[in-house]
Length: 561
Image (cartoon, rainbow, N blue to C red; front, side, top):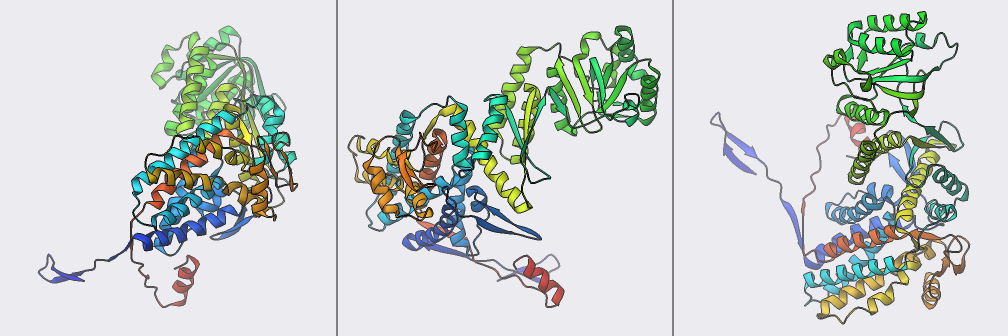
């Protein structure tokens, strides 16, 4: 506590909170406790016989999952020193998820193994920690190269389904659903996940361009006698302006009348009086027209309308002043437009600049690679699907919200695994691929310094852990499984689902090459930092003061204070 002179001339008390500082073995021991808690929680989910984790959620039902990233994200420890260890390990899972979208559990197990071994080595003293870190990273790079050499390409839908089946913990029906979807869309197709309102899973394919906004007035569909309005050989006007006067769209209406074609107008907004005029023109048969509000808001709306203009071969009119000088080539044209109360389907655009469209697609794919949040990734994938003209949505069903959430997590992991498998190939699963890389470490040139050799040994021991953990979760003797798999060669490994040994690739038990590489690389980076930590600085815990009345006590208890 320090007393200082305030503005009014009086003395004011200012409190400075001390920090807790720990050194050497004690600091690493505290970090390791946090690492072990998080790793044990995540490791329980690995393999076809891995266990579920139940996660409390404030004010709503608990969440049940086998997704390693979800489990790791929810492990928060009360002790700040232990929580720092958990946070560092969580960073390995986040990095792997951001890189490939799968393999987070494997990354956690590898990182914990390397960190534990590294800390054990440092207890012996007289070790250069930076050289040790270099040895760990050098060995991990050698293993990644060996994985690339072993990689086998994915050429059939059966192999795709095998990858999905492993990620889905052996669920063949769901793996076939993903395989059928990719067979329909192709390996570059866009697949979205949504929650179903029923117990069954289903896939909905959307041809052409589908927008989440329908007609602005139900009177546009009055003459059709149905909810949907169908416009054949339709002109399309795209603008970001808010239309409030009929004079603004007279040039477009006149063009449609002269060409005797329907006109679809998509704008930021429409004034009520203008809508009445458009409906009247439509019902009286002067010009077949329909008004649709542009999807999205703000900058997001601008981007989606720019996408649409390229896909339609139209010019996006930025404001109302552009409408007065409208030319025929500024309008897009489609073979058919189907407009419902909630959606607009634009089928088979007629005039499209393929070069510009493909450039836009490449740009969005680059943004997808750089996306950080799930929301951003979902929005970019939706835009990509529209531009490519075909989109699939898998509606994930279940008997309860808990089941739907858990199955959606597994679907998401499976889709990511399938993507990277198609692009980079696959390897025998069950931890076998890592065991086959141990000889690659033996073939490295002799280490020049002792610490480099120690780093290689740390990575060598960690490569055994995925297979060991899968076997332990399956309820068999993990040491015996390791012995038999190491004695074999090639694709020979342990099938934890059936409890048998054999050719894992032939059995459809495979892991994407890129997932295994990313998991190892991220684990080595984080583990080497954990193992070489010397000082740990945290804030001392401060117990909040809770008012004594019963209501505030109950609220404080509810939020964990």
